[in-house]
Image (cartoon, rainbow, N blue to C red; front, side, top):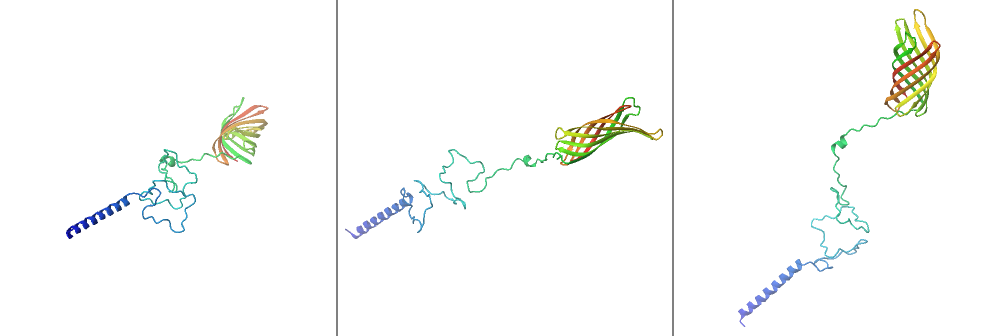
Length: 275
């Protein structure tokens, strides 16, 4: 065989072997390792490495984490033993991150929800111990065959103590003063021992018995006075309250039976009460 033919044949055999090696290397890079076998170039765990308790090998076909995976956050401990995962079709609520990734995000409430002013409910009086009160207003004196009777100024005062938070005993005095002219006036005053009962937190009633005193003062003809047994009844509504004070509107009626005939007082008062 000629030398030229020998060189040509040798070159063809070398080119064929080089092409076969190139194709085999490309296939080894493209094809994944066989199931259960580590990837090409895997060096194995470092010396002394121990798998964590409960570690299980990845399932067949596991391709590793997706590109860009950063791993769990610091302190992440994984699900508890026996965790089965969420049910099929489970969707986490909007804005809720995976476990270990911080608190879930909740959108703020509508603006009227947190801008509406809050008003604390009024506090009812704490009625105990000593009680004291005064009232002022208008009233009238009435009696049969009484030419001097009519409207005038009225007032009341009471002092006592609470037996229970809704029941009190007290001394109660009320009066109506009616001016007649520059030198005379007519006054009827009733002193009683009274009991007051609160039917609710604001509504109360009061009643008492005692002594009535009527007086006609006249700087020209002299004074005339008379005293007799008397009774009193009242009802009131507390309009404003605090733990130790109440402002009320009250109506009151008294009657005294004098020898010359009975006389009564009617009053409408604004009361100031301390507990």
